[in-house]
Amino acid sequence: MQNVSNDRPTRLARLAAKPSLRLHHRLAAIERLTDPELLVQLATEGDEERVQEAALHKLTDQVHLERVALHAKPGISGLAIDRLTDPRRVYEIERSVPKMAHWARHRRVLMSDDEAVLRLGDPKLDEPARDLLGAALHVKLALHSRVVERRLPGLHLDFQQTVGGADYLSRGLPGGSAHVSTLGATFRIERGDHAVAVKSWEISPPSDVALTRDRVNRRTNITQQADVRAEELLAELLDAAPFTDGELGELVASEVAELRLAAISRLRAPQRLASIATDDPSVTTRLAAIVRLNDRALLARLAAQDKDLQVRTVAERRLENISAAKR
Image 1 (cartoon, helix red, strand yellow):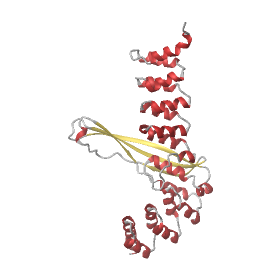
Image 2 (cartoon, one colour):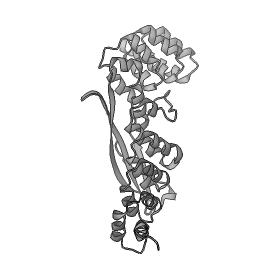
Image 3 (cartoon, helix red, strand yellow):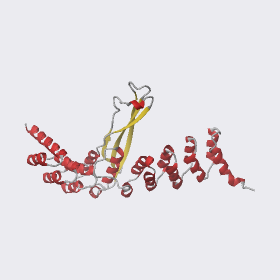
Image 4 (cartoon, helix red, strand yellow):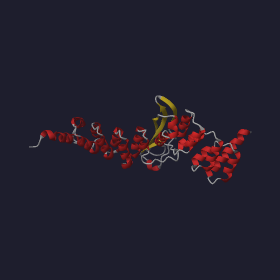
């Protein structure tokens, strides 16, 4: 004879998965269910989102949550990712599930200050990140700089995202509409309970949204992010301690682009600025040095002879600004 006691979890799972049963009965069955394998199955394969959520809510083991994150639909997968506490498990989702990569990366970057975890996936650091998540990653890695850690140990980045939005009706397209979500953020570099540097970036919804003909009778969702200038935050950080020109010179060689730009903005040695403006391999870094130069002969040479169009243009503009200021 079959053991009725051992079969009870299966019967509860069948009740929870039965579409013809009233929802509150299905949820009640899940509430009494304790078998994690059956809960994972309901969370990943359930036909009703509230059933999936209820099953997910009962899971606590990180292995089971990872399985749901890997195999469930995006909404449920995202909820499972947010329940994961091991950043390396989160990175596995980021690496393995393309449609959830951004969500998982967001979770990993915000949950960890560990340098090895932040470097997973070999992030590109040599150019400034203007998106919120990329900038947060760059700032966190900048705080691991040997010079910064020596001068200001124990720093931590707190990242708060702000969400706004507006709805639009299309002119001339029947039934066409759009919702624009705007994402801003406040970055706080903290040392203990004290804020060492704080910067906010916001973006306002556009005055109008142009929709194309293929959006007739359709709703368009658009996301716009604020343009983050993390070098401004890091420059404020450099003002919080007496960084010497020697230390700033070390930071100019940092792999993190925003830290290089911040250091250049605070560098006081004209010869060092001239060397960066002419010889640095990064055009972005060279431009940051050029706008701080006062050597008219060097600026004239760069404006006339440099191979890079941006360098020539910025050097020429800097020369004009110096001349205008002396009139």
